Image (cartoon, rainbow, N blue to C red; front, side, top):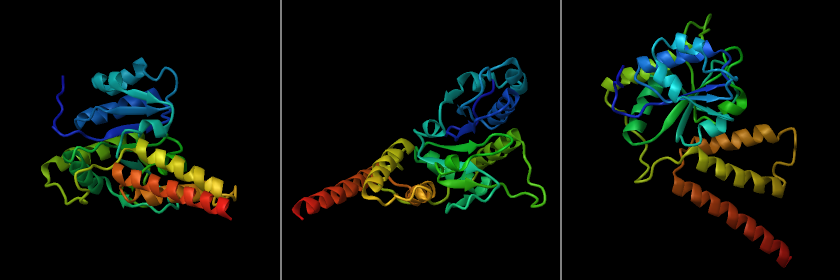
Length: 254
């Protein structure tokens, strides 16, 4: 049985709506080549754990058997503090863009700090949807021949995993100082988004129905770039609560 090469916790590989069980198998094979085992599937088709998947995995059975399925991308990244989204298309969102090599260096530093993180990979034919990309902190773009950038799913997974594996011999880069508290999980961040967006709906800020989805994505991207800690999120909850309370009191006084 192949042993994990790195003592650090590596990235979760999250396949969003994968179409073929063979591709899940080849992705699992690519992961284990690089010592990774945390495979997550978002809305996989029924019967994905098939003989074809095991055949394509070529011995990486334990990755397939330990894989977890989720009903949504949000659920799949809920326990993660950092998320990268692989895409070659311009999504017209304000997000940092990393190459796999640059991302791997950041991942190594995050792992050394005890943080959990992952990478989103989209369906083979269409790639990730904007709603999936909006849940990520950073876009992951592979620098290839600009005249031909087509990769299949397993190739893309292998590129990212390989850079993670190779980065183990490099010195960890400098990281942002966050005190004693790590970056908050996506679950806590999405709880704040629900709170903020609920109050923005109530006060009429998001009243234009056609513009609401883009405005919500822009607001979420703004906060995600800040790499907020749990305490910072609690502070933001308090700010929103006090603003709403003050508005109500002022209305009653008037």
